[in-house]
Length: 82
Image (tube, rainbow, N blue to C red; front, side, top):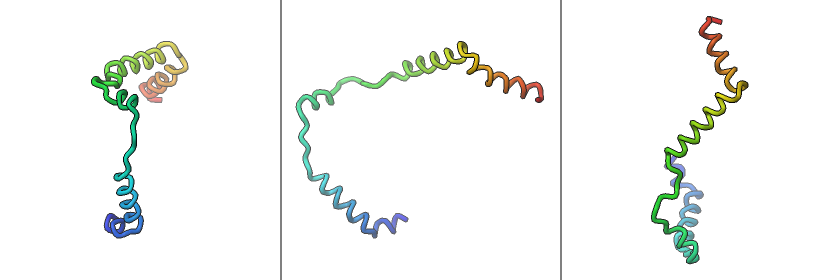
């Protein structure tokens, strides 16, 4: 499949497009560059995501009986041999 692609017209067109895009220069404003040059992490820490996940799952399983009943009823029926 790779050999077929290497000899195809599609590859020739793609190579031409890549070369054209590589030669173009884009102008980025000073404000955008300032925002892009961050010196610290801007992602949510994993411990925060885990805390939210546990809080939401625990809240759903304790408060909503409609959520908990199908899970426990299937487990109880399988334990009883039914």
